[in-house]
Image (cartoon, rainbow, N blue to C red):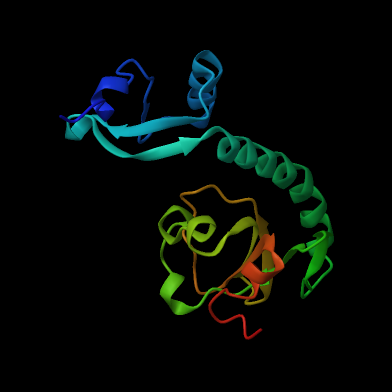
Length: 173
C-alpha cells in the first residue's frame, strides 16, 4: 500500500513560537528543545503555520544587535561632525553607508519596509533633519526601533553585504 507516511513520523510535541513572540522566548524554546528550527504559528487563526525560524538566524540577529549597539554610539559621535557618511568597510564584503530612502518608503515603519528580508540590509542609525525655531536646519541622530517611521527628511545608516547595499532603490550603484 503506502508504506510509512509523513504523519507516522510527525512529532506533535514540538514547541511552537507565536507570531508576536520575542526572540528571547524563542531562544529559551530552542535551548529546551535542542532543535535547529521551530514552527511559527498564529494563535488567532487556530494555530495556522506561518513558517519556521532557524536557530542560526536568531543567533545572527542577536550578533547583529550586539554590533549595532556597540557601533551606534561611535556612529553618533562621528556623525555630529560629518555632513555625509561614506561607505565604510566593516569586514570583508560587508559595509555601512548612508542611504536616502525613496518616496516609496516614506511614512512607513522600519517593520513595514522589511529591509532585512527584502534587501538583506539593516538600519543602524537614522539621521533626521529638522528645522529649529530660528529656521536653521540641524541633523539629529536617532537609534531607531522597528516602529520608527521613515520621513522624507531622513537619511538611514544601513549595513549589510556590499552587493545588497548596491541593490537598494535609489542607490545609483
